[in-house]
Image 1 (cartoon, rainbow, N blue to C red):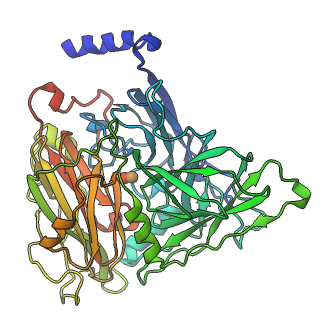
Image 2: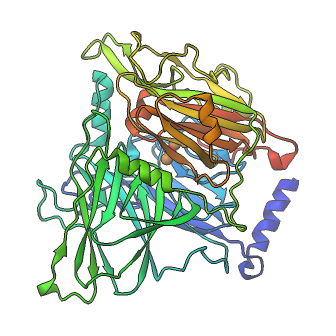
Image 3: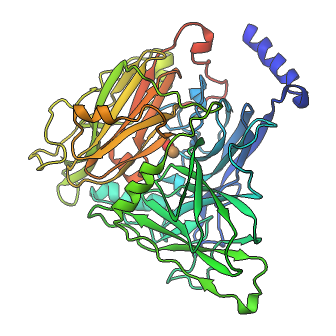
Length: 555
Ligand code: C2O
């Protein structure tokens, strides 16, 4: 009863937004099949409101957002608001079978959350099957009214969504791979705001063009929505000033190239300070392991408005080599929290849970597969098995038999993770969670392994931002802790663990619920490189999960 009254009060108060500066934003997402002329194909794709990329969700810090998702396609659906902390509202987080059962064909669900303590660029995407290939879009969170950016305000802001495109149906691609036990086909092109740019099979395709005026500054909100590839992004002759990643401000720094992994967002300032003309934007893959990638560079253009079309010359740029590890490392090492008075880096200094998770691939026997075996992926040798009903519901209503909370905090059988390969590649299949008390602090060392092949894994944690306190090559050692940056480490929600190396993160478990953690390379998630934390309620209603909404989808 009291809760209902508070809700009514909140709604009434929000009728006077100027007075209280809070707002409710309403969106309707109709998920429909649609043809898009941007892609060189007449095959219909799954879209939101017929758009590719999908619509931008705009809000201000403090706003409440209500998004009604209506499923008009033949697939089960769910949508994740990637990076939104969802404080106490895990029901709106979106990963299928983790925090909700899918929205079935013909059904709908209203995602209802408040943007608390965050501003910057995030994004939303389907969180079931491989639908996120085409079901994704930007989330732009502006600071509260009257609060400036901690850097000179740009003249214009532009969303730049990077993606991957397959000629064939994406669901067919992964279905085939799951059947054979082999790796799925790589994509046929990368996209910039839905345009592949000129690719060999599609020469008439024009790429995305950004018109600019001399002397003006542009803020590009770059988002990597690709399924399986980390990307380099650069613009011919123009420096990029990085000001924010994953909706957290950073100490600004200049670079020619940014590295962005699937799941990550990066805001950069670009000044149109070159001679009038056309400048190429290049997006190309980063892969420093012997694994095949889609090596088609996507291109777009920056076009100075004063350039006369007939005489315009295009300044080209060479993409970095695919295996440019040094460049990738330099970029990652340059990222630091802004750590100002207004935006302090609140790094946990004491640690309640010190965890070591090995992440990598494995091989399990499979009688029906092509080679008699199946490529899998794991964390601490556990290949995560998706439950039949969502974990949050099982946790909230204490339904037994859905998961166990004995996820190992350390490898059960330690070995030389980045050394010679062990004989046994097999993993354990289970639905195990790691339990955390409310407000406990966690240090998690993500240790890449050389099982099958070492490669870079962008690890994403739902429900939290974390601080990246250290990274290195080889096996993590105790003494590496001495070099941790506890002063101004970058704060984010997705971080790359280097090939054959480790990354250490710290966070405070101040959000009750069930929170998914997984590799944001979709193929690795499919293979089982995922687990979840269950964070218990704290004391009183403010530290407890809210009840599920009335239209919460049924399994
Ligand atoms: Cu952007 Cu669990 O994902």
